[in-house]
Image (cartoon, rainbow, N blue to C red; front, top):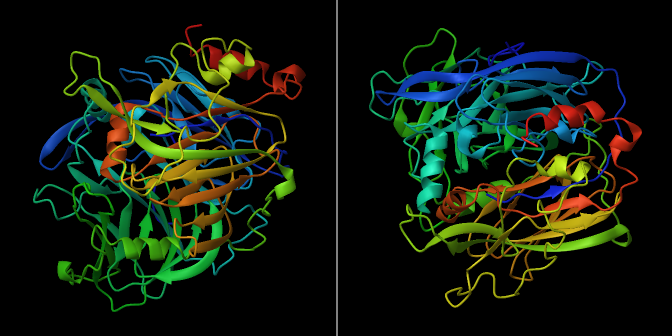
Length: 575
């Protein structure tokens, strides 16, 4: 079992880049966890649902360690289908074999087998999470990954009296894999969630008397660090605590310049560390969450509640006092996002932004939801939605993962080295797209990089999708600028370090990738709460481009470093 569980003071778009990093040397501990993945029954909305979960819990067990530690997680698949687990936001220096994306760094863990992940922490600090990386199984296989300061370090703010993990979730009354499989077969959108949850609790707004509500007990005068994770399938979320001010101190395991707000807006896959002081009259106060969407077809607008409860208090809950922005309050969302700045504190790793003269490769990527022919007997329409980067919609391989093929030098038929460095057509990305050809092409196409390259990537959002969140897993990026389609609008983001970014229609996001960052691969993924992105999920599991290093002299197996890892990962695939 995990060393700790959640509690106070307890403790789509895809791209792959093969680069390298410098090892971070420090005194660190090893931790060992056992994950038993099997089906369990859960009753919510007065309905009993069977889900695949870890250690019979939803969400799963919390991992709590210190900065720089190494974590071994032995995953036993006692379910009925294969899956992998991804350590969201962990850079895994020189350890791509344990990153987890299905058919990218490994084949699925088959039923009746087990696989041990070695999760190597470097400079990550704060809140991350883990989840299945096989279609929608992440909806039920998920949990928090808490990284405390190293023994000789502290927080860059007053030490809180306690901390609490808050996981925001999408709840369905069916198995998550079944939902996405039906959508893929018919070429239609996955349905809206049946409810939203806070730490597995649906709250008191859905009308089922047996539903439970999450309660966080606090003492007057204490300050609490909330570790907030948006584990929802596609929905950005607003979150607030009635009558209490939130102080945002970190996002995605990196500290930011502190600022206060009455609410947060957090995107799918993102994490935020937030301070809140119990400084109001003793009583019970609602915490609440609802989705955010700027699209023409927003997700279902449910409000899910929890309770921020002072010790020895009773009553006082008043739903009319909940002060969340409305679902389509774009001004509130953009205002909140625009306040993030890098914190120049010693606890953050120094920014390593390559100079313009050090940029070896420039890539301009247009993000869109296109169409592909729908040729199966289950198809409802002649075409199906397909997310794409530069008009290429990614198709996963089968029976071999891409990393294994690369290290075996057997890439023929697995991927091609011709991902376009620019969109096939430059057009008015925010204008009328009715005459634009929206048919995408399928493929596994890559951009080859040399070891140590500096890479400049521009992510260009378009009218479809209307908003996207982008992640480069296993790779820190520096969010440099946010360019509007209006030239007079320009935002300096103070070099915000993150593996997460957001693109908005008509905006181009410029990011820089430091030289020599990661040995292994990066996964460029996208999610959003708007209707176009939900159609994206129904068309391709992982639409993206791949990027791998061209040079072979830095391949770690030549030094005998990864021989056992290669063999261990190969056993998962039917080679």
